[in-house]
Length: 71
Image (tube, rainbow, N blue to C red; front, side, top):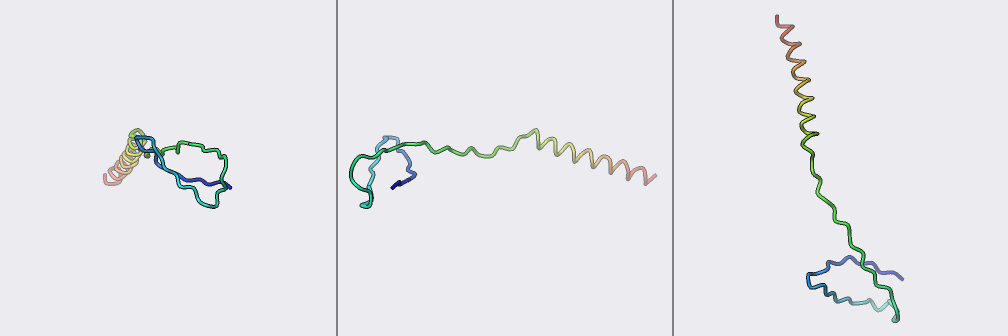
């Protein structure tokens, strides 16, 4: 039988664990495995600037084409 429970370790590093009656008495292995914290997604300014620059390039081409037609 294996029981997995995610808990938050407090600053004082004290936990009280209640074991279900279904778990037989005797020796057990208690393992602490840190849960990986997910980092927030950070948008890179370079990619945003690349997209804006590409948009500007497309708009410039359309504007040049429109000016050529207007002449």
